[in-house]
Length: 77
Image 1: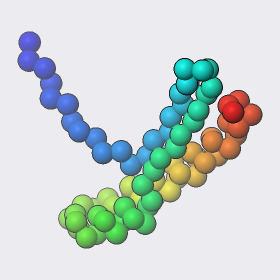
Image 2 (image 1 turned 135 degrees about the vertical axis):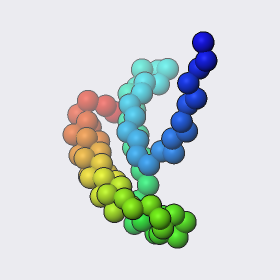
Image 3 (image 1 turned 180 degrees about the vertical axis):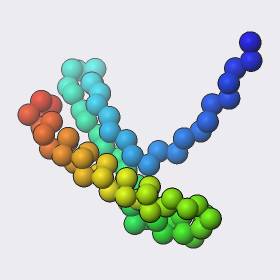
């Protein structure tokens, strides 16, 4: 059976929770700055029509991610 080709995804936002070998819980958030994304897309892919939508989503995810990280402080050290 032929396997379906995997699409490569470039991360624009990520929120991770993991556990160290010593049992500590760690959380990480990484994201592309919306203004940097917009500028880069305008310079390198001006034909992409939804740059403003993606930038808006990045702003939203950053805000919610920061809220999650802040509210999680009581659970993780």
